[in-house]
Image (cartoon, rainbow, N blue to C red):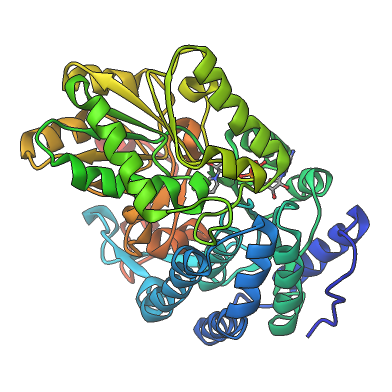
Length: 471
Ligand code: NAD
């Protein structure tokens, strides 16, 4: 195992290149990983997570100022261990070659697809769920037989150093390694000739990563952000919807890529929904400042952005309802906030919020709500609350999003059997489970010529033959 110093400074460009070259050369020199080695790597990853639960929870809480331990367990450790179990259980099936049809002209030949490792996968991860978003792509990458290099976010330094130390304790640096650093290292990282690069982060940085990868023809998976809408239909019980929406929104103080960004609600219910959401918030978080269940916002820059958005909405004439605003400011937190009638030109109506502020947008007809969603970039997630099958179908048929949870929020990401990814501005490609395995595999086409082969006789001089083939 590599003997890394857990407190060494951010990786420099030369060390990054050396680390990449080590894995790249190993991937070309050694035969691709078979089932046994893949399972062993998955087991080592499971051991890494299981034996450091307390340390990971503490490091993440330190980086956030406050993050409830149960949130770290529910949103980071449980899904990562779930992904590990799912991969372990299904790997033999996923690795099995897929038999394909052979047309009559080529029989008795055979055709199949082998899913083979690509080589070295680069993983750039964000700060909001630092463990889950670094390690669940890693599960898929090593299940597919690859080596991997991870660059976590500089905004979670305690977590990043711990990840580096624990990865070095379980993996040889030729197999899996972690490099640390900020934007400059991110830039250098995305310019390396990986066999595949998975980036999770903002759409703006995603564009830069896509360009850098294109220089080397590196295929990418881009897991980006966006404004994920909730469409609340008239038939659905409002208190029940408010509970799910408040849960999905205020968890981790709204710093969840698939958190509801805004809620579309029948006009006559808008105020009642705002009241119900505030009531949910008060019940879930009786206090804000010293409450360990209510997460901090990751940095001063993000706090300023969010507090500025609240002020802009207020001065633009919106109705702004907050809980614990005065005490939140003293603790460096952003209060849970519901906004009615946010002006179109404010950040609330145009950019991804990524914090504990929830605008409510009234609509007069379901088609108007659908048009509102379709007038914006394609979202990462969409939520629809209805018991009516026609409305459910109508919303599903008329909108496009990376994923959907019906009558709930966030829960589609927890389904190991479903792909997870965005569409349009919210991302390119999906991973998790079988889709993740395939994402990091090369689908290699194999055709085995049969003992009897009509094509043996095919060839010039063509004579009359050419006239007979294209009938
Ligand atoms: P970010 O784009 O600022 O940073 C993400 C990572 O990219 C970090 O590791 C950062 O160091 C690195 N980076 C920064 N500039 C870079 C550059 N020029 N080249 C290469 N790498 C660079 O995102 P963030 O603030 O860490 O995360 C928040 C965003 O991520 C939100 O938009 C959120 O919606 C999105 N997100 C998406 C998902 C998803 O699964 N789709 C999950 C979580 C977060």
